[in-house]
Image 1 (cartoon, rainbow, N blue to C red):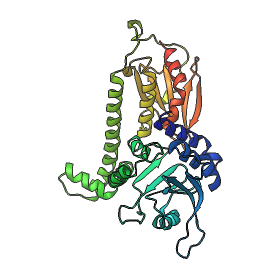
Image 2: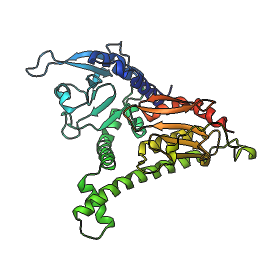
Image 3: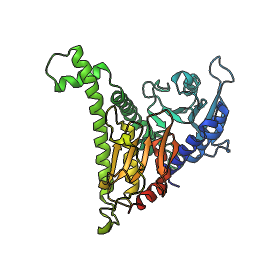
Image 4: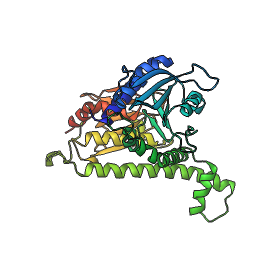
Length: 363
């Protein structure tokens, strides 16, 4: 299995099992040890490679232990401190990492709750662990651009010099991306004022601020949607579609309607970026059966519908995202909907065959 595939597999395991993990020990056994073994490639049962409960006396702190030390070429190279998965990862949890980093040869320290992995080194001062990570891996939302850098820490291609040299750029790019993401989601006043000044020449009054706060948020969502659409077009550009002339305009199914009347009610509807991304995933899946232009989205008050040929009687899926527990609505041959709970957009791919079968039933 390729490195990226192993990472995706572990992420799926974390999503499936996180509800049963309540302690630090359970987090280590279920999530962290598989990360060390399957992702980084070190033998967790070989004390010459992975040392659990690693001890190194630090000043007056005698007998203090770090959860794992990874050894390469006879030297401790990576230190790992774990916290239980139900809690957040905070720098306050890294006090032992700070102390151990100064008294070992390790240049990489990892703080993790089994789902989020924060990687630290000593960019700011030699032999002193930085306060901010240079790389953050979130198994709930894997940033593909970080995979090559993460792979450099694996046993097979361990390249400490390369990752240390890239750490500075990774650190600032990561912080900038997280800052931009936060501004896109909930723009701060300074961000709104900065962008407003580029497009509006009048005085920046309270009324203008309120107006542009809404406009900036909408523009950000539309911009991200445009980027997703552009990437999808490029991804689909090389695909071929086995669609005969007879099926370009499919006959309308005249059985009982499968979409409720509120599809036609536009007032009060707000389409979210998450709904658009979910729609793009569904469209990418079913484009193996029909041309992408035939897969259309239509938002409603209670759900987001994905339809074939913009026809209410040809539902492909419904995205019920306007609630705490998200669901994807799937349709059988009789167009009866079954709601399946999902925790992330990636889980839509688990229903590929059902989605394609729905489209085939209308052709």
